[in-house]
Amino acid sequence: MVYRKVIINSILFENPDARACMKKILTAFLLVGCTSQSGPASPCYSLCQELVQTCDYSAFPSFSSCEEGCVYYQEEGVDVEGQLTCIQEAECNDFAVIECENEYGVESDNE
Image 1 (cartoon, helix red, strand yellow):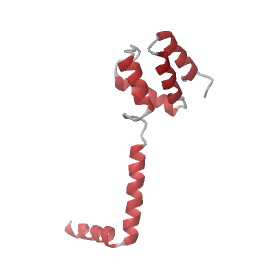
Image 2: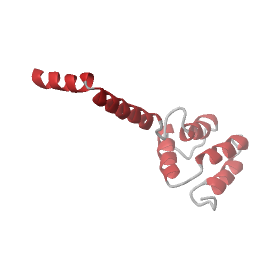
Image 3: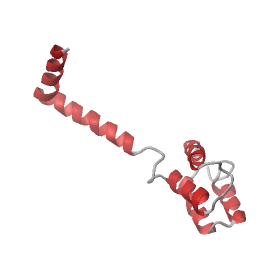
Image 4: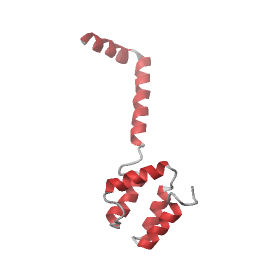
C-alpha cells in the first residue's frame, strides 16, 4: 500500500507532464461541477423560488419537485430564462402565470 502511494506521488508531483494533465482534469471537473442545472445561480432555482416561495403557487408539493421538473423540461429544450422573466413580470397573477406556461412551456411553439 505504501509502495503505491510512493509511485502515485512520484508520478503526480515529480513529473511535469503528469502535473499539467492533472491540472487539466481538475479544471474540467470544476467546470462541469460549476455548470450544473440546479442551485442558487441556476434559472430553475430562480424560477422555482418565484413560483413556490414568492407566489406560493400550489402546483408543486415542494421546492425540490419544482426544481426537478424544471431541470427535466430545460433538458427538453424549454426556455426557462424566458419563462422566468415572464413569470416575474406576471407578479403572481394566476392567469398571467398560465400564459407564461403557454408561451414558454413544453407545449409552446418557441422550441
